[in-house]
Image 1 (cartoon, rainbow, N blue to C red):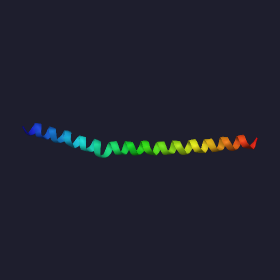
Image 2 (cartoon, one colour):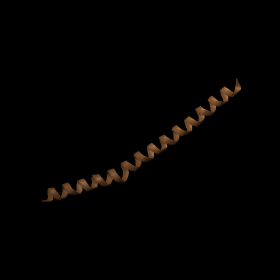
Image 3 (cartoon, rainbow, N blue to C red):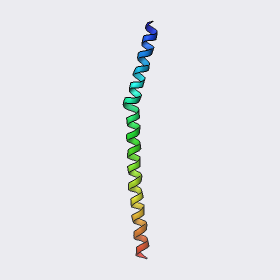
Image 4 (cartoon, rainbow, N blue to C red):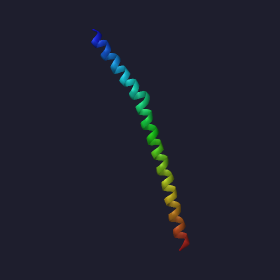
Length: 55
């Protein structure tokens, strides 16, 4: 019986860790990557526009 209770507690703890720490960290990392990609796109677009207007 104790083995079943400890197994259930282990599963609940694993779910708490996944949904409490891992998923928010992944979403934060994806958000950071998205912001970085948008900034890189703006920089490339500005450099391209400046280079075309200089000609």
